[in-house]
Image (tube, rainbow, N blue to C red; front, side):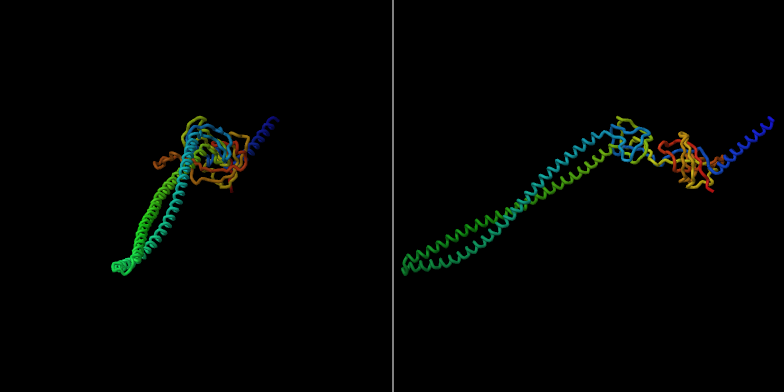
Length: 375
């Protein structure tokens, strides 16, 4: 009886083992299974301060913390940059005040020159007209004097012959003397007008010379404008540098590594944090070449991470590398000497996680994967 029971137990054990063996073999035929699995990220970045250096006054995050896009995660002391900005602002303000004063001076000079030229031209025209009139008057007086001289000579001859009374001669002589005085007065007037003409012409010349000072003022104003423009660019650059003293996360993600400490003085470009972007994690599988058959882009996969044995992840293949991992080794095997040991090569396969809590995953974690083979 006991022998029969023993035989039954053995047969049951063999049956159970056969079932499990069948399932295991079937599973291995349907899935490519490997433990050469790593959590990776295709865009993990080291963040650093751009174009600025100095003492770190604040580190907002620690390793493992979640960060949002646009969030300030570190701050540099910006005292020196703000001092420089204030100096540039003062220089700009000083140059603007100087430029304004020169512009006001230029406006006054231009207006004065316009008035001076307009007045001088008007005076010149009037003087020239008066000169012409005076010349014409002198010409008429000279003609009258010629006639008066002839009358005076004729009456003097008649007076000598006692043909006319002296009174008549005196009238003719007086008329001649008056004409001579008129001519003398007119000539004096003409000289005065010529002096006025010269002064008017000199006024125009002085006004024209003032135009040279206007040109110099315009050049000086233009030079100040260029200096102000240059300082405005410097001001904008320093304002940008002040903004750069705040390190901002470029995307949502988690802090993978903190490289510096508060109070430390760092140069521009030195890494402060390493950030893993949200949704950038994937599973890298180094799949043996013997298991590659039936694996396609889109193949479904079950992923198990050693650090979280109670959590299950699902995914699908989104990339199969066209070269083996050995091709990218730092020291690739040299088979040209004829020495060769056959080793199963591994093909990098990338799996995108479609189900599971990826917030707990860390780059570099290992695990196991089952990839469903396509028929």
